[in-house]
Length: 218
Ligand code: SAH
Image 1 (cartoon, helix red, strand yellow):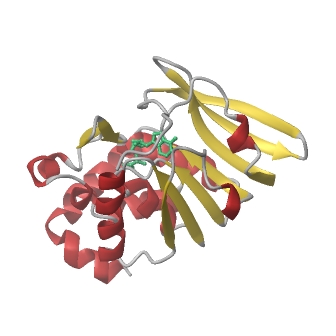
Image 2 (cartoon, helix red, strand yellow):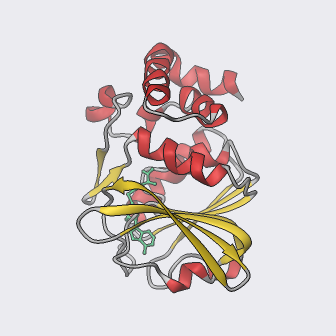
């Protein structure tokens, strides 16, 4: 797998390691997560005009007023999720597909939903190019998440709802974990673990995400 990805990202291997060291300095400890960030070429998830900034630790625009999350935030969310060792994960907000790719290399199966069709089309091409065949994408927005494929033992939400969405909590398996930013202007990254009908909630840190919206854009 690594050799295949290397072909695509040869020129920026050293730049990616610099990013990994920075994330480690900022407190990311899960070496499996760091390894994926070191191997996955982030530049292919951006338009060419922005690809030279791919290994800066910053969020970048991907069109349609959406953003590819900051690498630190991708790493932190993935680390919190992976601490609970989920194997079937639902992602809300495919966007560029970068977070999907990171997850696909760490878990058995990733189901990812996106409401904006042109973003989903581009993400699908990139995931195929990286041969990440354990990813399944769906256009969604009218219904939240992917109830038919649930329950999931991991859910990661990369757009922010104003409050905790009940229809996602109900797609979480018993013992499952959800990582989600909650709030309006600035949000609290929150970890929810389900124990039967109880939901144990832990605040992680403040973050800024684009809003979770309803409706499909074609
Ligand atoms: N994980 C992405 C982040 C993209 S930004 C990445 O790594 O690039 C968040 C994405 O969530 C946007 O693409 C936005 O269109 C999408 N989104 C917002 N509300 C949604 C909803 N209700 N269902 C599915 N996707 C949604």
